[in-house]
Length: 159
Picture: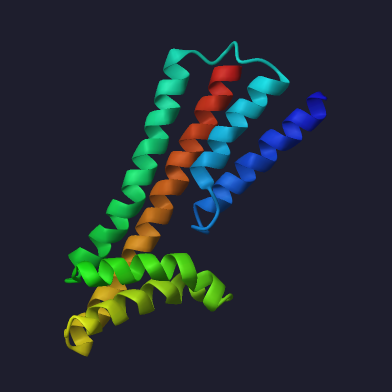
């Protein structure tokens, strides 16, 4: 049973880290679930108030930062609310509509179309779309770092 427990924990960590790159995967939640799997297969004893508080805070920060950083990228490059909404829709549906390049083209095209709908010229719309990509990559790096912190804290806590 111990081997199965570790396989599940590691698989959830892998899904979590992939979620930092592919927004459709539940990154932080998969890592958080790995802690419960560890507790169920082994023990919850090492996890006290501080472990759960820190991990929960990281997850909350990640969810807030995910949207805020993406919106920041669009706004920083002159985008409007419409381009933020378009970029968000593009992040969600892009990978399904354009499988190979949807992760990049989805938010780019979403922000571009959102900005064009508001009546902005092509130059301003393109700039906002570039901001969507900058926000996406910044968000990915932020999530990746915070998820690594979650895993490292887990390892420190169980050792």
